Every structure is written in C-alpha cells, then in structure tokens.
Image (cartoon, rainbow over all chains, first blue to last red; front, side, top):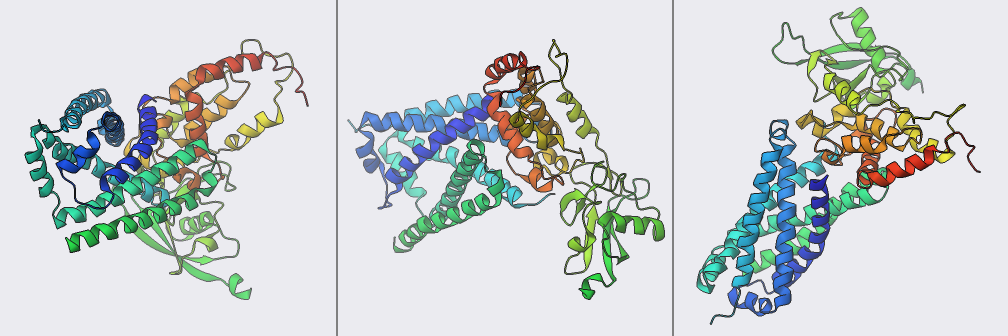
Length: 108
Length: 115
Length: 260
C-alpha cells in the first residue's frame, strides 16, 4: 500500500514539476550550456524547486521499477531485498543530484 | 496472451517507464558533471547534442508524454467511476500523446536540420 | 432471412493437448454443420459425440450459471454455453477455441484452477456475522443491497482470472475474482470484520498489484465490474479503521426497520 501511495502522490507532484521543467529548460532556443542554466539557478527558489523535483522523480522512478520487477513471480519473493536496494539507490542518487544542483554557483 | 486495448496500453506504460528510469540515471550522470566544473559540464553536454541524440530526444518526448497522459487516465479511473468509458479513455490518451509528440518533435527535427 | 437459417458448415479450430502423448499444444480443425440457435458448446458436443471422442472440456449446466465451460474463444474469454456460434464465425468461416490462457493445461480445454480456488478461500468469501445476531432478519436498505447485488451474481467461471495480465506474470496475486468477493463482503453491513478483510487485500499481492488493464471487465460473461471493485477497495483500505467503526455503529441497528 505504501509503495502505491508513494507512486501515486509522486505522480501527481511530477505532473506539476515536469511541466515546469519542460517549459523552463526546453523552451526554444534549444541550445543550453552552463551559463544559461546558471542564470536561472542563481535564485535559491529554483534550487529548492529542483531539489523537490529530484526527490519526487526518484521516488516515482524507483517505486515504478520496484513494481515492474516484483510483478514477476520469481522476483516477488525477494521484494524485501529489492525494496532496500531501491532505498539505497534512491538516497545515493538524491545526494549526488543535490550536489549537482548545488554546484551551479557563479564561478569565483 | 490476452491482448486488448488495456493490455497494449499497459505494455506501453511499462516500456516507456523502464526507458524513462534508464534515461533518468543517464541524465543524472550527464548533469552531474557540473560537480566537476563548467568546462567538463559543457563538454559532456555538447557530446549529447549531436543529431543522433536529437532523435533519441523525440523518442524521449514520446515516452514522457505517453506515460504522463496514461498516468492522468489512471488518476481519472481511480477518483471517478468511469470504467464504462475505458475504451474512449485509451484512445484519447493515444491521440493526445501522438499529437503532442508531433507538436514537440517537429521543432526538434527542424533544429537538428538547421543546426 | 432464408440465408441466415440455411445450414452451412463451419470450421472449428480446437487447441489440442494430451500430456501423455504431446510435447506441446497443436491446433486441430473440425467441420461442424451449423444449425439455427447453435451455441459454441453445442458445436463442441457435436464434435465429441459424432467426430472425435477424445476432445476434452468441462461443462455442466449449459445455461451460464455453473461456470464450468469458460474458454478462450476467438481471442477472448467467455462461456461456451451462452455464446451463439453464429456470432463467433469469422469471415474465414472459422471459430478458434482454446483453454483459458495463463493457466496450466491439463488436457485440451481443461485447465488447472488450483491457484484460482486457493486465492478465493484466502479472502474468506463467507459472511462473518456479528456477535449478537438479530432475532428475526437482518435489515438492509435498498442502497446497501444495490452495492452488492452485481458482485453476488458472480459464477466463479475463471474468465476474469485467466484474462488478467498480472496473473500471467505472478500467480501470487489474489486475482479479480477473489477481490470482487472481498469487495462484496467488505461492503456488506452484516459482515463484522471489514478492517481485517481490507488488511488481507492491501498487501503487496493484493489490490495494489492491479494495473487497471480492464481485461477482467471485458472478459466477464456476467457483465460484472471487478476493476471498479478493486478501485473501491483501494480507497477503503486507506481508511479502514473509520470503516470498522462505522460498521460497528451500523450493526447496532441491524434488526430495526430502515427509515424510508
């Protein structure tokens, strides 16, 4: 039940965040580089939005992958281990991604 | 095998979902190069802005759009009593996803061709 | 009209499998003369009595109430006994019949339904009555009866169970048939343990394993709606304590007349 709720609520959050992401990042012109991203990322509000986006996207991706894998009967019996693996991957990716978002600082 | 519109929709949802998970980790790796400074970042970003990756981007757009609208369909089924209209909902999702993929894909293609 | 009633011969393609002699299933064609009002089951009878006695299938009541003759006819699950042969004949003048998919085949159209019945018993499909039973009858309102009525007409044929793609992957999933029964008992005001039932069906192999593919609705020969039942259980599972309390309150008035 928890997996399902996490997946549903993160899905609803993603509908909002992904729309924002698609509009601000990929709106023409299509060329992007460090400088262009930096203009936006200088504001702490965008940093917070991006970290929240990262959190929900990881939650949705990992619960989704967990559901796909545990649909197979052979994997279903190992679902405890798979859940822990997903949590470990999720935490690691979250910290790595947050560090990336943090790294968009004006060069000193 | 029991094929039906629902089965096809589920299969597409699965495939696009798995593709998006793989993309997400690739995306984290590419953007993660910002940890090592602007030069590395721009170099790695340029590596994934070749015409081949633009084609992948259209596939990515299709996967995102389909997965998102299929998700909206599931939310509608969950919160409203609409199982009667399941066929129409499937086709609506297929149509909307196709239209948005074309609407987004054509500019990407033009950008790719014009440089 | 005369054209419709005229007798014509149709090809019935049957999936054959005998575990003693065959390595894998194969298709065998039979020619059957179509008579007016003939059902698919009648065609199978015709083949078994007059052409090939080894064709094996289950059937009993032949009026869609026993649930024995569920089969895979022209790519969908339905009962052979209430499906007119005329409606199933394709433009190639054939009808294809096979066993229920995703289940182990015992012989020809007979499948092993062990997991089907195990999951059915697991959700305790019987009524668990309250401790103090009313002296006369239980009284329910029209609306309460209406909510369960559809689910009660399930004949346990297995058409929904074997159309479910999740069952195809994972036999540990409870399955649409048992979840429909559970739904019926959870909503029944006479049943005294809705929270316990919801606990049972809300695990990793329960209602949240359903991926809303809708095959069960398409397959059901009785026109029932297991998907909606599963969606309802999902919603109720998140507030099961509240439901349990409401049920306790409701059961204090089981022998009282329903206010109009």
